[in-house]
Length: 307
Ligand code: CP
Figure 1 (spheres, rainbow, N blue to C red):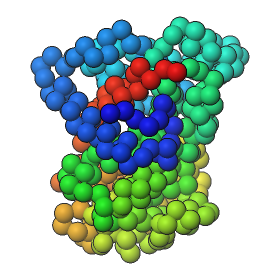
Figure 2 (figure 1 turned 45 degrees about the vertical axis):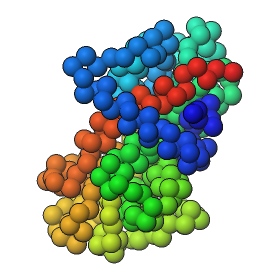
Figure 3 (figure 1 turned 180 degrees about the horizontal axis):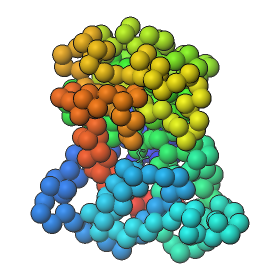
Figure 4 (figure 1 turned 90 degrees about the vertical axis):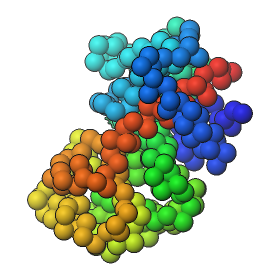
């Protein structure tokens, strides 16, 4: 079995069969991370370039760990310390990296569309590790795996995505992927942070989180993206937290078996109270663990997919 795509650029490109294959492969990969020697030789001799032109903790580290657990060589490249800082264009950088014959390029960039551009310029598979305010497909896949492991299904679940939808690539990838897999997805947040036209994706919009929390099986809280000046979209963090934060008070209205996701990094006390982020309903650290398995699966499935 193989994927219908050469690159992982958008969840839009993935068929349901692709998603099932990725999740099944990720499930098989999980066991490797539980061994005392967490390494198998299946990608020995392969080279994975991790090009992170924007900060990352979870995604970059989990891709590097994923590559190393499969015995691939992982090489890190960032803007600082590369010749981009001397004025080289991104395309020239990509062409020069390609000349070293890598097997996969993993790319994160602050501008939407950069992984798509690089995928046209290089010969090896490209994985989008987050592009601007556009998409974060591997995050949506690991979220899918996290929900599935606990709820055992996606179809028919009500998933509420709450917070800064406007600046969130996680939100867009999750809306597309979860809807594709049959979930009902609702959005809630301040009006200033709901993108115009988003309802065309078939997602009801709420401006009061109390209207969406009682029927949600999964609550996905989003980070206020202060690096994209998201905190200028509401009067104060205190006010945001009061109206749109998940805390003990708002959780009183939630289902007993609700699960809470957050892609991280968490603004504790802003979009989510610390006791909720660390509480019994939270799957935030499970998401991180599942991220390694999903990225191992993607590297495995894409390696060798050269033209
Ligand atoms: N979820 C996520 O993308 O986290 P990082 O920015 O730390 O990679």
